[in-house]
Length: 284
Ligand code: SF4
Image 1 (spheres, rainbow, N blue to C red):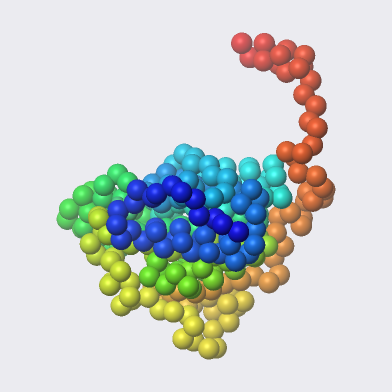
Image 2 (tube, rainbow, N blue to C red):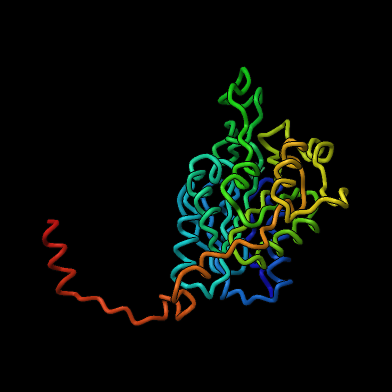
């Protein structure tokens, strides 16, 4: 199926988000899903525009709130394949609380974060994943805070699927996004997606020198949570590929009685208008 649309992205030439868009289109196409059965919910930031750049339902929400909206969409219509997307500032700054709880709640949603360690849309402030000492408009003398580790936070929160990619490797990115969508439960695909305009440190070249592809470790077992935590620490959070997949934890829908019945959007919900108006009057 065709998940490309005719909208031309207004990202800067060379922005890593182009590769994420391509990988999402390929992954969704490979899974043979129907565009009308897919919803992409995004937050605010350059990356947040992605919900308008694919041929599927799109909702460009408010800053840091892509996951609450995505969970609401999934609850209302569990027949939809729901993806959430955004940047590191959106997801790991203002949206961090939502991220941790979504990870432990384990609804069947795929969350794709385009992590460039900077706020690009607002023209170059340091972000939650900027390294200590990183110089940006807001940190001219160097960042005095440590970068957070989205991977360690995800594992600590009990995430059931965790992978990381790099915009330079669209094939790997397509595979892990596809695997994340196929996974029954909450998945995070964190993507090193360079901001070529404002981040002059974490460039494509820098990532090519520093990322560690997990495929080079034949003994690595992504179903072993302790091994995943160790590998994330050993690689300073720069490992790419499938990092962890929980084979035991059940998705939220398997734990709620009746969830699999007709989606709420298709149910005839009776609203007692008199009761509603009376209640509203009490608040006036
Ligand atoms: Fe991409 Fe950075 Fe340009 Fe935003 S400012 S579109 S993140 S390169």
